[in-house]
Length: 354
Image (tube, rainbow, N blue to C red):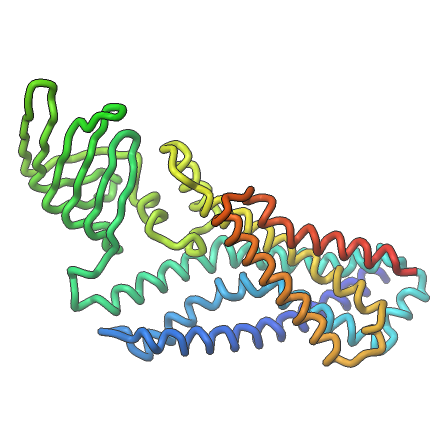
């Protein structure tokens, strides 16, 4: 019997959450589409804007799933409470803990879906969408196709004039240091990374600073090996939300090995973990609400409560994550605080149910 009831509640919650998520994505996609229409340029026209918006939807779904899970659970469980089905379950001997366990199964499935979206689907599509937009906007202007970048490899600093999606860099400047002393400066007219992650430098001209003078060397083609490969370089150019958790961890490790600031990427990885975990809490929080005054209220009241709590969580989590970077606060503390607060509220609300 318990298994049948668990499946019934799971279908109710998942169906309501899916409906809410579709509505939220429709609104978010519309706003994204309207915002992008102001940036049309070159080959980036309405058809490309539609494609860009569609490719961004999985990442938007990842961001909205905690809110959708809360509103969907409130609507689904509220409907069950409104028809006295939850009261019948309690009368049949089910405790609040057992009901919370059933609801948590739905949260577990939503958590798995959120993790898949945030790791394997959303980031690569978001990265592709942004590259597609850049290529379409500047395809007729090779001088602006790409991004300027500075990267560090041990005691060597590299200045890349233009990084294209094919990892062709144009001019490349290398500054090699021996502790605090500048050892050499080199410039290559053209550069790139081959399939073996070797750096190919064409027409390299290097100036070495020695104790008694300066020595200049020139090479038509030089093959260099740096720790920075195409994956790390791509991570340095991509927005943190366009990186998977594996790419974030790899790039954080690179930044720390080179004594560079990794706080922005640490905040993103912990923020992503906290947001994913919150999806598990939302259906249980909704269960606590349906035992109260919302049991006899309509769908409008439940929807309003879900929107208010969801927006409060979203705004608090975004504000704390951004403030943490500005004021150099602990990433774990600022990203987990909203989720822990929701968990405490949920446990307190459930403990008051008789």
